[in-house]
Length: 361
Ligand SMILES: Nc1ncnc2c1ncn2[C@@H]1O[C@H](COP(=O)(O)OP(=O)(O)OP(=O)(O)O)[C@@H](O)[C@H]1O
Image 1 (cartoon, rainbow, N blue to C red):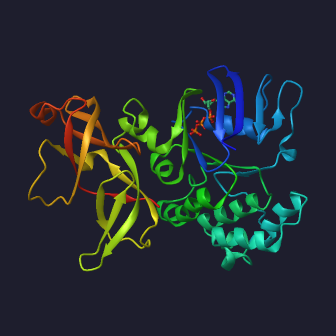
Image 2 (spheres, rainbow, N blue to C red):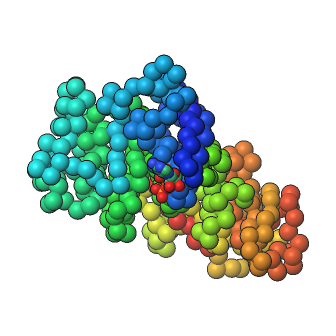
Image 3 (cartoon, helix red, strand yellow):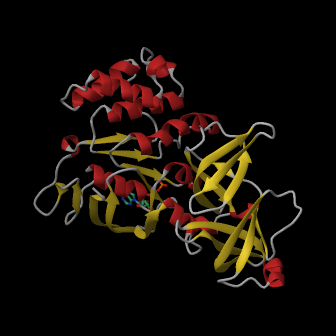
């Protein structure tokens, strides 16, 4: 089902108004992204039924959870909710906490589904421990397993990494990354971190002051010059491709970009043919009008200038198209001086020189 969640809510606080009408996909991770106070948590709580407004409408997989006549209470909604801090029962082991989730669902999760969840979150070694014997990241993984044990129709996550330090975040991210491919239910993931969104999201809802500013694929929204992602110091674009080969002698991996073009990155562990997403920061991309000859930069991609925008007095952000058929876009951040010297204009054919590439999955 392409659009499995339909949510329409209007809410008015003395100093804040939320007004959304959203159709969201039935699979993959949808990030609810926005700055502090933009209404992310409020929207998640409305979907969970933890907060109630009149005239709201919510349907998940064709099942109405709220309309003018009906308001399904939270405990009857088939959803999993993961909070900023794992709210595990302190007197129960991790296994008992997960089983509690199953019992609450009123169903017995079959052993193989349970094993899959335990495997997905890598918690097999932790099942006999109590919450105080787990790190913050481990507790969150158990909390996610418990939420999944409810057999939810949707998994709601409210900044599940916010309470963790950087090291714990790094530990848990690979488990969260698996969610978009492993689960066949939608995940709504509240975040105010572009890094997390770039790594984890398939779809993004960008909220600004309680309004939906944009909805679309993470790839599309990151490369748009008019949105907050590109206006950030860490502006970046996301490219998709597959592993072509590894060069053990130089410790490099070659990636074939979807739609054409190649990128060389430091050696990866993925096998040949595997799909990967890479993130390229705008500050790591420079432009040349002619194909550069001898250069220490190995990644040079033919591109076409789509759009330019001044971001600060001294810099210009440029959106480049690498492949028209696959909608592969790059961002380049160059000085206004260089931009004028090269006389960069939209529609122009250029060469993008990519200094560094971060791999995401
Ligand atoms: N019960 C309430 N009464 C009045 N105002 C509220 C109430 N709850 C939230 N707000 C206001 O609504 C706005 C949105 O809050 P919300 O928690 O949804 O934002 P958020 O995007 O999740 O922010 P953060 O990233 O800081 O958690 C804020 O300005 C907040 O002060």
